[in-house]
Image (cartoon, rainbow, N blue to C red; front, side, top):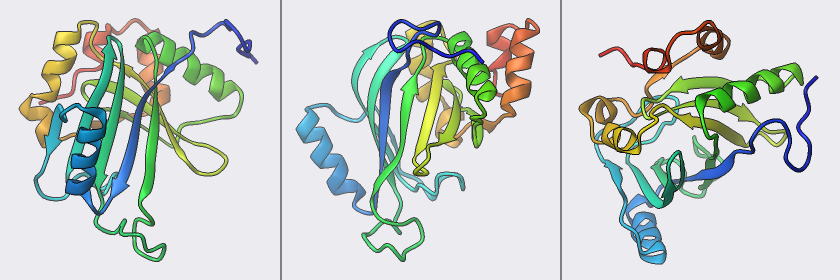
Length: 198
């Protein structure tokens, strides 16, 4: 099994990229974080309920820092059931998931392969459009998203957030991580690999 060293291992370490909170008080939370961070949300989705996998209605992404391909984002998912009652569907308000961003798809795929050798498998995987993500559960069942951007150019990455395709479908498409990585290793160009059919 390949094992990373504590310092300067064989895989470049990912960087904390995103913390997403679930809340039933979306407007108050958005106003509070925009005020505290002194940054307006760069992406808002306010239509009817979102994809079943998140259960989120309204979504806000507040971009705190960016140095492509890395970014730091505070995300807010409105989940009406997250009202503070542990008995409500969706549970209590709090952490929805955290994201760690890799420098490239190649780095993400190498980490996937090394973790698979260690017996750690993603519970889900998505091509979201702007990025590709593998989702894992830690021993306490916290959701940890390991991700890499799908665009080498930051302008293309940001433009995807404004596209009708993204507004219609924030989740993107669910993928089979083993097949996705195998296709990459077989030489499928990244631009073709990450393209979401219209």
